[in-house]
Image 1 (cartoon, rainbow, N blue to C red):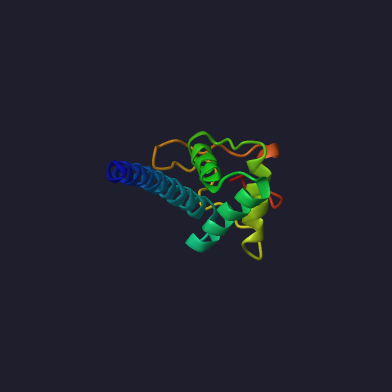
Image 2 (cartoon, helix red, strand yellow; image 1 turned 90 degrees about the vertical axis):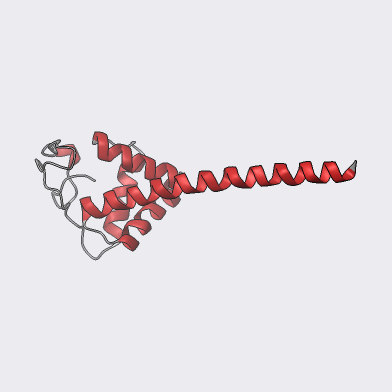
Amino acid sequence: MTDNKDLLDKIAALQREVEQLRHALVSHAVVDQAIGVLRAVHGLDGQESWDVLQRVSQNTNVKLREVAEDVLRWAASGRLPDGIDPALREAVTAVGPTLRRPVLAPGHRGPRGTARPAPSGAEQWADGAATP
């Protein structure tokens, strides 16, 4: 009887592990995509983009994956949650000696054919570059 229980426990443990691995794969893909967005928009390299995501996560007490999801939603909609927006600005500023200007200029047509609107006064970085 204990052999069956041991086998059932082992199966349950393996099922949990498989589910955790599936979740990790999805999380990894989301984070990689967000890194790509930060690289394209701000001209950061991969390590700098990773550092930005980590800083925002730590400074806002939001899980890294959720920050990455916010960055991806921002890439599609142009809006960041109120708590993430200033933290992202600060983190991008902190990764280099100077604030980086976006690579994609306002009005640039991205891969989806949508024009990036010109920034309003509230959407300006300290040096006049558009928000992330």
